[in-house]
Length: 247
Image (cartoon, rainbow, N blue to C red; front, top):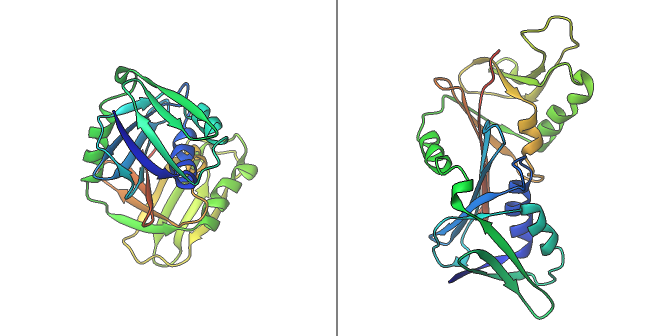
C-alpha cells in the first residue's frame, strides 16, 4: 500500500475536473505517482484528443499506474470532504480516503480497460519539433466557444491561421461546404512567429479545456498536424494534444 497527500482544491479543480470532461464511458483515467508528481491521462472516445494532467510537488510514494473507474462519482464524494488537505491510500484495487467525518472508496478498473499505448504516444508527441506557437488568452478562448452560437450545427470546424500582419485569426467555416454562414475574428493581436495558413480543429477541443484563469500556450507541428495546448503554473500542468482535421 502507498499513499499521497494533496490539496483538495487543486485535486478537484486542476486534476479530477479536467479529466472528467472527456466522454469515455464511466469517465476513467489512468493515474500514477512519480517523483512527487501526480499524473492522470485520459482521452476522448475517438482518441482524437488526449489530456495529461499533473499536480506538482505532492507528498506521495511512487506507484504503478492504476485506472480510476468513474471520475464523476469521485467528484461527488469529494464534495462531502471539508478538509483542505487530503491523504489517500492506494490499495490494490481502490483508492481510499478517510477522515473524522467521511470515508469512501473509489475502485479501480483493470488496466486492460485503458489504452496502455497512450502514455507512449504522449512521449513521442512531446518529442516532436513545433514550428509555430502563440498564447491563447481566456478572452480569446471564450470567443471561440461563443462562435458556436453563430454557425450552429453547420460546421464543427475552427480554422486557425497566423501572420505578422493580422496576428492569429480564428475562422468558422468549412472548406467542404459553400452555403453556410461564416465568421472570422482575431484571437492573438500580435504574432511574431512564422506564418501558417488556416488549419482546421474540432470545436469540441475548446469545450474540453476547463482552465479558467491562465493563458494557454498553443504549439503546432506542421509535419504531423499536431497541436499541443499547455497550461502550466508552479502547482499544476495541463496538456491537451490533438491533430488537425482534414480541410
